[in-house]
Image (cartoon, rainbow, N blue to C red; front, side, top):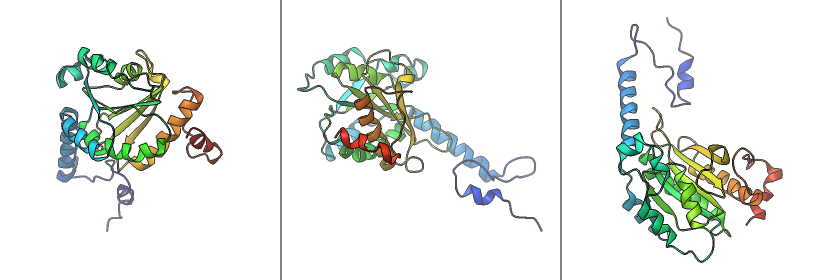
Length: 255
């Protein structure tokens, strides 16, 4: 009589590929097929086209300000994947459109929603995240959201600078894993300008129902946003202390 596999109980707690079993010297057919499906989903997430019209319609239903739709200098998905540098810059028409906005007051926060490497993640999790986050930013001036096609993280630096925002929040799809094609990332940069380094940003990763839920991520983001504005920095000098009770007044002080 064989003993039960102790890994089986652990497999119920994670989507990671553990306790797959064996079929001779290989994996069981079901495990192989499951891997192939996960790989296909990840590949599809990378190449899926961002449904901008759908995002705009859903945003309007939430009652938000009219979104601004922009495009990076990467003219298509192939170019976006082959030339990361072009995904970091606005095309000429988009830059001119943002310059013409003439917002009445300089915003505290500019929000950019970009496809990144997983439009699937954006479709499923971007608006639930913002729906939970925006009430926590009460009292701050929020620019109209910018929806970017073929955008990377650094595109937010240019968007934030053009809009004159004190801080930019970039929400985009992360590179899909074999168990997480719907993983969203959120990047904060204080005093955005072209040329900011990754060390000058704060990042929340794996935002999705099976990871860091949008509701939980919104609390952390709100804390980081208010702390960044209060301390006038983001990056390695700003740590997420949102779960430290002694530091919770930071969230209230900036409201």
